[in-house]
Length: 172
Image 1 (tube, rainbow, N blue to C red):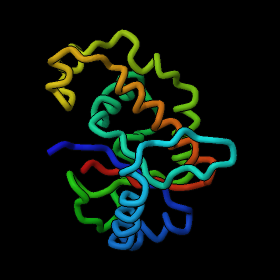
Image 2 (image 1 turned 180 degrees about the horizontal axis):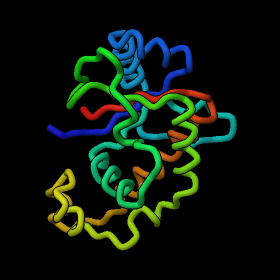
Image 3 (image 1 turned 90 degrees about the horizontal axis):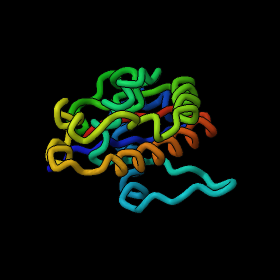
């Protein structure tokens, strides 16, 4: 069983409802995941509506470690706070980023080049820190797949911020 990072963006009214009605939020997130996350990411095009759902796959923990190490100002991997009253959606309850925090995250992501994320870091460093998935780092694999997930996460947050949306995040 793999642990994967999941995201769903919600319009402001939906976001407020999700914080009041966590069961509704779960249904909405599951619907978005079924409709969009199973498909491969599509590069953004001018005027295209950004996807509602996103997954960082198994890179979630490496992204958290790498962003923390550079002092990233918004926790885009775990969110700001748990959704009140929500049951676990995998490895704990979903967490959220309000629309203003999504905008702050998008701005910070846009100003943080992908190369900065992994500058001076090797797979051995991630293995030594016990970053999931440990077997990948113990084999000494390239960090490029994490950088690719970071680029996709930047696009997701950019689209969510452009639309004025809030985001729910969880690990399943």
